[in-house]
Length: 622
Image (cartoon, rainbow, N blue to C red):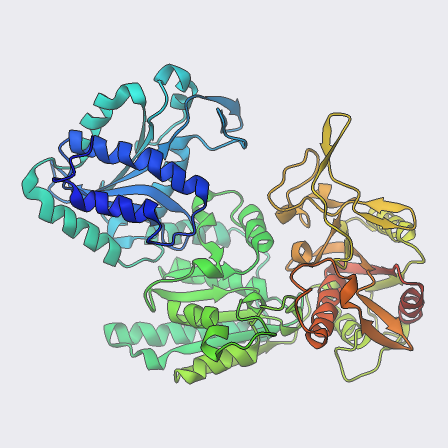
């Protein structure tokens, strides 16, 4: 039993955590897990004579959505310095290894990381983003406690390397666990004040990438040879470096009102991401506190796969807009890539300007030099607020200087600036009327290929032929006009459902987010994994990516009537677009097709399931 008189404060924390007074965004299952596991831990601390240590429950890791079950703060019995122990609690009764570094636990549906691997990564993340801890020798350790399991029932889990940071304990190893905790946290009652101070110091500590992490990332990025800056890219790079230098010269006396907000605007393939990677490399090499953030899960996970190349530490340099929060100006530079995806209030609801720009404000606050890389024609959701005007207004309201750079180059679509012009004219996003592709490029040497197919099968065959003859990757994307069904089981095998039917041509959407299907890549890797061909991507899986040959299918959400585009909101299956106004839907759906049309590096093939629209496309694709 817990000693309530002695540990009133700990019980109060527990009651707050599981009683709903603090909203941690938890579901019923998580609250149940707290009720079943946390009393076990707190009772263990009392038995160990460590009832005085400070316990941070559900402690959120810096610049991450992940939370540690419990973080114990106290004084080390040998060094006398602050000591921290991360605790991962598992209710598993048994578990076994299944290969590939994964385990299967009884009663748990999905495969899991071994507990020591999970909490070791939490431990390393805390060190990587808390410079004051990274500078010390051994300030942080971790334990994984399977309090419902006997060792014999989880013996496989002891085979995973912990790198000295983590120890695993089962229920019948309780005495060993108590001894380990007492070796890391001073059991003396006179250390109570030190434990409180350790917790306060951690909560107040600067949170930014440590130099060791920055050097590791910079070394990796510098090995790539495909980031060469030209013209306006170099101008933007110099602006960022100058702003960083000004803040560095001012040192601790740097006034926040001297902040410079840099907006880099460019179309698809104009080199925004090359600029982002170069900034990460150079700033990391010089020990500057820099992070990269996006609002796209698919884009970020592909950066993990293709840029970080699976290195878990380097992955931490790439996060999401909603994980960038905390004290102002903790970072030197924050690179906000795909910034057109910054979220805000819904356009059809009355919202105060400060609410609409809440995420913009938090991103500006996070760094001395915030950098926004965007394409306003890629705003495709009603709640996206990442336009130059919105960012500029938010910065100028606070008296910050704004620098705007337009990238004029074109590195995607075969380097064809004319193709980008052709697309915006075709979709009515320009004041200029649509023009035939051959007419636009008649007097040039533009080699980009534009074709319109009479049917969906011909479009697919065109892609196969092109990729076979000229090499390169090919993908088919479409407007979100067909239901996206969960995978189904056929003859005992899990397969993607044939969601899309166009006159007998059947194909599935890409793998639904969170699902796993044999022989199909996860949604985030649809554009980069060769297995993505044969599935159809939507704007959420295509945006931010490129492939050599692009097939684009127009659904009935955007059709031609009387030689003019008509948006048909009742035809969309996208739940994010249904509630918006008709006028705003019209702009968003045109932006969506602009995104889809500008993914191809060498050529694009178009088709619409609507006959009148397909005739229009065939006319202007000639």
